[in-house]
Structure formats: structure tokens, C-alpha cells
Image (cartoon, rainbow, N blue to C red):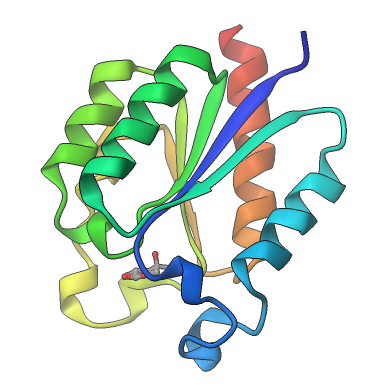
Length: 146
Ligand code: DQA
């Protein structure tokens, strides 16, 4: 069976490409998904996005059922969501938090991540490459775990 990785994307990431491109880059989420699939043709990738916190919790729970590891860009819920923190801890699937930007170098409200405490590690600040680096890390975790 191929390794299965879930990539979960939070609110407003559906607007990538048009949304503050000076911060988040010119690529759309579809572009980023295509880039991830091209980089890992042998891996089963489930790539999802929602603007709704509860749906993201459902996605984390689904990953707990069928993923070997998770890459998650929780977007603004990074800084607010105890529900996502709890979901990641509850399912116990190895997870990598990623961000396109470097939240620590931005507004002070972005310095707090509730998700960081529930994942193995964080990659941020590399634009769309944060997804590729996150996938590399998740693959390693999946192999070590499984
Ligand atoms: C983000 C950073 C968050 O602070 C922000 O709310 C986002 C995107 C990033 O990928 O850089 O929506 O997660």
C-alpha cells in the first residue's frame, strides 16, 4: 500500500493567488496541490480545504482513520483553535504544521499557535515551498511511524 498523507488547509487559503500576494505569493491553492502531486507521484495525497473550523476538525479526525501523517496549514485558526489542537492530540497521527508566511515576524497576534503544541514540528516562511518541505517532513514521520 502506498503511503497516504493528508494535507489540510484552513480559512481563506482558497483565495491564494488573489489574497495579499505580497505576503502569500502568486500561486493558487490548485497550483500548490499540483506542485505537491508532481513532487510525490508515488504517494497517495488527500488535499483538502475548508473555511469552517468544525469541518477542519472532521478532516483531522478522518486523517486519524486513514493517513500515515498529516500536513496542516490551519491559517487563522492556528492562533485561536483549541478544537484543532485537541483534534490533533486526540487522533495522535504524526503531523507537521506549515505556513506560507513567517507568522513570528508579523503581527503579535500571530505569535501564538495552539496547533504547534500538538504537532511534531513547524515549517514556515518559505512560501509555497513550505508545502514541499512539510511533505518531506511528513513522509519521514510516516516512514518512522509505520
Ligand atoms: C498562514 C499564516 C496565518 O497567520 C494566516 O492567518 C493565514 C495564513 C500562512 O500560511 O502564512 O491565513 O497560515
